[in-house]
Amino acid sequence: MVAANMGIELESLEVDIEADWDARGTLAMGDYPIGLTAIRCTTRVTIPHDVKGDRADRLLRSAEKYCVVLNTLRNGVPVESTFSLRQLEV
Image 1 (tube, one colour):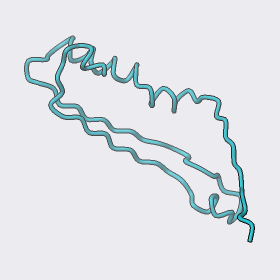
Image 2 (cartoon, rainbow, N blue to C red):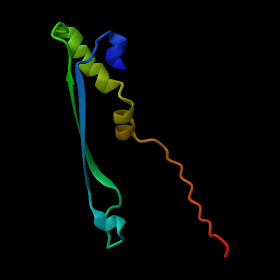
Image 3 (tube, rainbow, N blue to C red):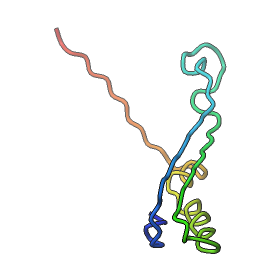
Image 4 (cartoon, helix red, strand yellow):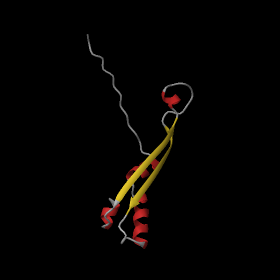
């Protein structure tokens, strides 16, 4: 969205996500954390050859600054969850 707003057509965009977690917590196998303990995001963008200098730098800075997912993960948000269980009658 940032590139489109700047009028830059991307040649390619690749995102790789890696995370650390310990399945033992999810499986209740002891006092281990439940959920991810670290996340690493690698983003690779290819831009046209005519986008140079400050404009390319501004794209990189703005894309990271205004990334909704990245900012949510870094800052957290309140999470509300509801679980329900129904049993079919025989």
